[in-house]
Amino acid sequence: MKPKRGEIWLVEFEPQRGAEIQKTRPAVVLSIAELDRLPLRIVAPVREFKMHHEGIFFYFPLAPNRKNGLSKKSTVDCVQVKSFALERFIKKIGVVEEMQLPQICQAVGICVGM
Image (cartoon, rainbow, N blue to C red):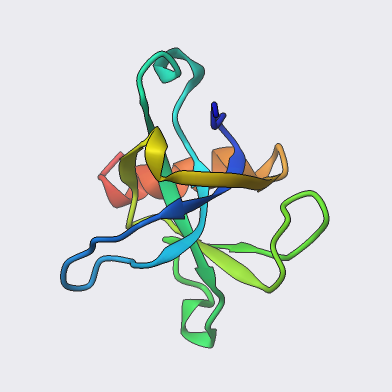
């Protein structure tokens, strides 16, 4: 199992603490290819879209389609970026559009002051 940058995988986020995102859910792989030799991947979780997500820079919208494998309108939560062991990755469900990945990474960068 080799999750690649831009792919969407089901990932186990538990155990969690406090306001951290939880349960098994989709996540976008953000790690660059140069990190693929490590048994870890950096991801941003995908969550169901809620009206209060609208217009907030760290919630990147994703509409469901055949390419990304999502079943409902969703958002990438760019403030809850995590690094996880490959054992937490269950299965690939899709991939984000090529133009979306840089926008997601830009939102992550803004969250860390870049």
